[in-house]
Length: 89
Image (tube, rainbow, N blue to C red; front, side, top):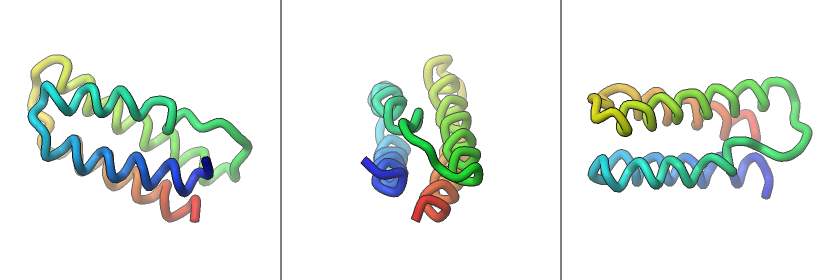
């Protein structure tokens, strides 16, 4: 799977998880780990964007796991993933 395809799948899943109840959102985010980890060589900018998306998704996951508010965290994860998608194109 290309970086672009992975980034698009991650973006779609993030938007779906954002609308889902917290107990459903966390498993959705956990399922994204293999997609965000990457698997091949990519330009440095793409690797950095993917890493930023990964960290932002982890922040959402931590907040959901702890029962903390996720206001703004999903937006940051979506923005980071959109950047990854744009650079992977």
